[in-house]
Length: 167
Ligand SMILES: [Zn+2]
Image (cartoon, rainbow, N blue to C red):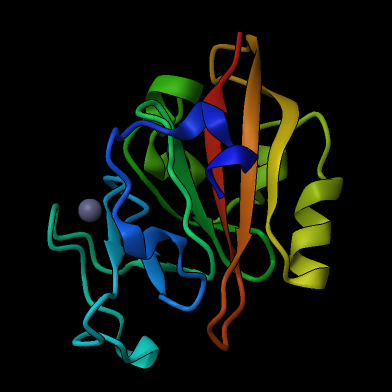
């Protein structure tokens, strides 16, 4: 797991349960707080709890653990890749605030250099990590980013787009 995305390891101590692929992981699209459902107390995915860290209204379920970088910004999209919510860090990366992006096709709104990975995630329901893409900021600057994409596992579909800067 860690070997796959070494750039994203930000915590020094990985709890032992992080290696168990059967333990559901939830991540807050706003503050990036990970919640590992270790005791099953909140294990009903139909009633996903809000974030205990920042109070954001829902958490995104991941089938495998994921460690976002401190600068990673999340964009939550519906099944048509339209933006539903924008987390912290996206403004710093893109210059766009949530009202600029809500309801827009994420690939178009951010002018992503390649939207094929988005289509693959939506079509096949698998995550894609480390896509080396470029986006265009609100100011019109082309910015290189690493994009990680995660499919939603609820009935509504959708996907989570994680944007991180790269030099
Ligand atoms: Zn949160």
